[in-house]
Length: 334
Ligand SMILES: C[S@@+](CC[C@H](N)C(=O)[O-])C[C@H]1O[C@@H](n2cnc3c(N)ncnc32)[C@H](O)[C@@H]1O
Image (cartoon, rainbow, N blue to C red; front, top):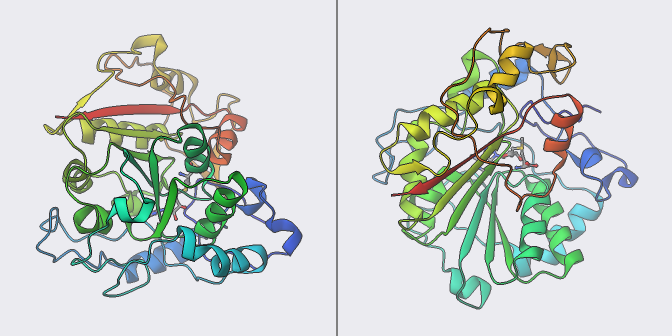
């Protein structure tokens, strides 16, 4: 089974029940082939590109995920049936099961039964980071936005296993939720950890962190709210930094920090490909050449220290094993 987290996931193959325990690696979404990704990518466009909502005038572009089956099996199927009533937000749709009715507004106080700061994770995967953070921060509410139904089922299993009352999950295309579902200024922190890298040049328009996402995230944050990001791919890290440094609505909390030899980017450049062992980086079975060796130094920096509120997820762990650098960024809403 392809467990590689660096290619966008596709409909998971049926797995024996024994493989569906909480072990994150073996539960990881199955990677698709580049060809099937392209076929899906051509077929699927942003369903709300024409809305009269913030960011709706953005150029029409494909969504950041590939449509996947919603088939659940075993424990996850049971979890969906048993736990949805407690943890899953019932989002009204106008289209596919990841769409959001633009007229729907999330009432956090009603959903959580209390008022508290809200943290939203976009692309929460199997729920490793959000469940851990929620357990560590019982005074905050956490909302997982994810399109991958088995990941949400897994997240609910984690929530129950940890006895958490401060996490809810929603199966939604996150930009749509940011545009209308979440009230303005209602989110204290937005997290985007290890988003799908979409390595191929022709697929990069599908990357989640693009200029058109910025006003959507800014909309839900109050002034002073934080947007935390992390990736293990240097070219996506640079894209994130370029997009956010270029946004007047945000400031880099760590501007000018970790430059020169302290920069993870310098290390990637000096050591060649994304793998310090000198072996080509791989996404699934394919070699991925994201950076050629450069005799250069990253003088700009701006990288955050590793966010200590993020537990070591399977994606980050896999990146470590492959010798890749982790790039953290933190921006404050102005
Ligand atoms: C590479 S995984 C990372 C998961 C998790 N953040 C972690 O670090 O383990 C990226 C996740 O983002 C989800 N995703 C991609 N585009 C999304 C979107 N537009 N809305 C919600 N989730 C999305 C994918 O389904 C996938 O589970």
